[in-house]
Image 1 (cartoon, rainbow, N blue to C red):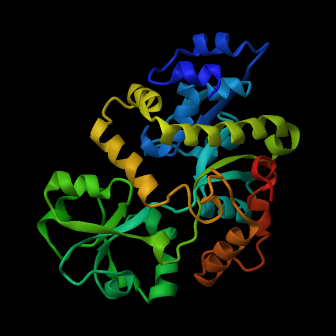
Image 2 (cartoon, rainbow, N blue to C red):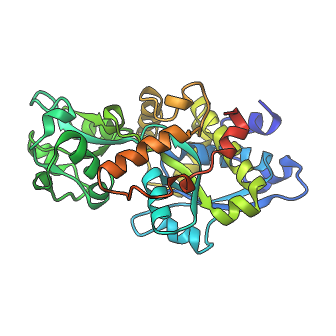
Image 3 (spheres, rainbow, N blue to C red):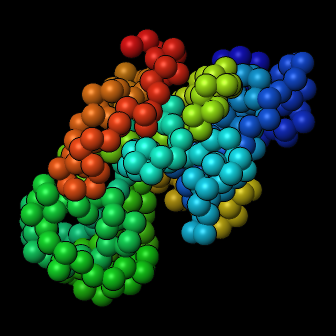
Amino acid sequence: MNKLRTLAVGVSLSASTLAGLAQADELTPVTVATTWYAQAEHGGIYAAKAMGIYEEHGLDVTIKMGGPQVNNVQLLMGGAVDFIMGYALQSLNSVNEEVPLVTVAAFFQKDPQSLVVHTGVGHDSLEDLKGKAMRVPTAGRVAYWPWLKTEYGYTDDQLKAYDYSFAPFIQDDQTIQQGYVTNDGYFLEQAGVEGKSLLLADYGWEAYSATLDTTREMVEENPEVVQKMVAATAEGWEAYFENPEPANALIKEDNPEMQDELLAYSHGKMQKEGILLSGAAEDGRYGMMTRERWQAFFEDMVAAGTLPEDLDWEKAFELTFVETIYGE
């Protein structure tokens, strides 16, 4: 562990202190936008910031929280931010819409997207849910729902309104609704309800998520900045699982409503489910992605009618930066 990281363990240092400790002639300013309010699922970015890892790589990173009214792609294309967290389907859709967005690393090897069901009612697998009513929001209906229809024979008449509330689930043991495996169990316990998550990734949903995306212009004109951002964020995720406290303190600064218990639950669940370290990354290669995985997901989306077969899908990602860290 280097000097900066040793000093940062157990404490969140100020940006000015970290900049001084880095002893760099000049730090490159970079802004990254997350997908939602600060949470454990953003832990690698917050750890890299809180523990001085970005500064070690010569970057002065500002984290901009996402939220329900935030369109990260618009922010990126408008030059308001340099990087965003994203997901594989968004990257492929960007190619389809001729938006020059490029994924340069994929930190979640398993998309945490889930369907939450009650235990003991026969809803034990995705196959069991065919023909059953379920609460799915608009985002899910355009992402994984077409895939579920193709792979598991679901139909649109199963869809019910979803209001991001657990109340209907608590009231009716036949309710099935969208969830997120990294926090489902926490909220079920809080509600006193016995249920479980059916993780879509365990049933063949191959989407990368928590991707690190930037513009084609950034990749071509400032590849050294992209390389530093990828490497530092990968180190940040490794550091977060070694010691989450510095990042969690910074997360709670940005999102004061975040609870310690939820942070702890999500931190543990990401590790237990292999959200970051599975597939090509199971040997510790945080952010790793492969052409074969992208192709498989693209072909699934074509089969589901989500993307055109003639899409130049390889424009959605650039493997150079993760391969520079880990090799092919």
